[in-house]
Image 1: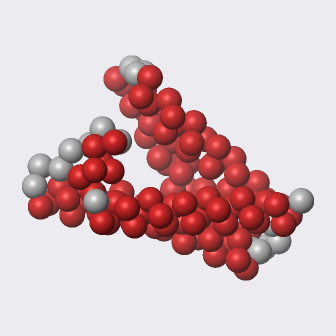
Image 2: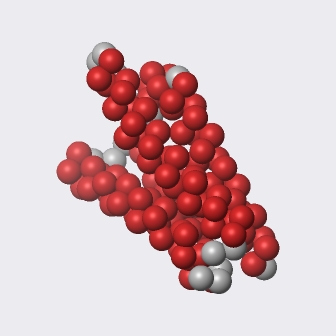
Image 3: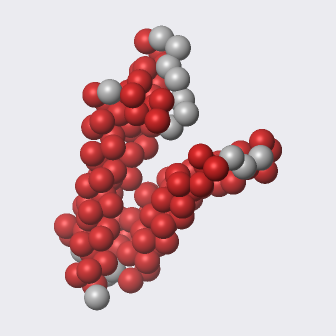
Amino acid sequence: MMMVLRAVVGIAGLLGLLVAARMWMAPEEVAAQLGVAASGPLGLATIRADMGGFFAAGGVFGLMAAIKGRGSLLLPPVVLIGFALTGRLLAVAMNGFVPEMGPPMAIEAVLLVLFMAGWKWLPR
């Protein structure tokens, strides 16, 4: 069971790194898929830094937790994804829900549960 959890955490971490790499290489394309548009060089830099950095940080810690088998390394992604999901819920409360919001929220909820499980059940 622990090996399966480590493998799934590792895959999630690797996917986070791939999303970050894609944001760094094609920020306008990825941002547009997420409903965000860059208004110039500063916007592109912000997408690369803030959004790419978010996915890279979560991906690195997820992958390292899987490789080392250490659940304590999953605390940073738990915090990052928890705050991201909180921001999405705040957006729904303040602006209402549109169907396009569902898939990212579902992905974040699944990742949050996965990383929390790894944080709790993998050795420290």
